[in-house]
Length: 158
Image (spheres, rainbow, N blue to C red):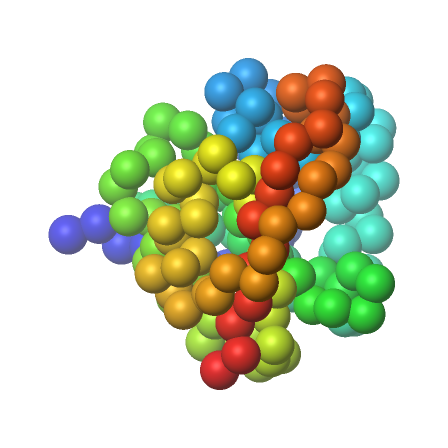
């Protein structure tokens, strides 16, 4: 059986996470990415902020001991939101669902909010399966697509 685990981020994880976030299809599906996902200096600066932010939680997801992605909570405009990224080679294996369930056990803040491109059916399914409820939609500029798109806003209360 595949072993999924969450652990704190360490310096040695940064190269693998950065590479993972360069996959064109992953970037397109995430949609709301930095203007230049290949900007390593921006990535490193963001990771430094994340690691010192006491209001958020950041974990590396491992699958059988190998980095499979990341999952985090952060505060934006007063709301605690969740985000995750799974290596595209591992999509469809239940890793994100299992990692999210585990993360919800260590992240005590409720309500917890999430957003996903409305056409990202896989991510929306994962969030809804974990108990997130649709709250509506919004239109926002998606750097990865170079246009405004609809995103679905979700919330977990318990």
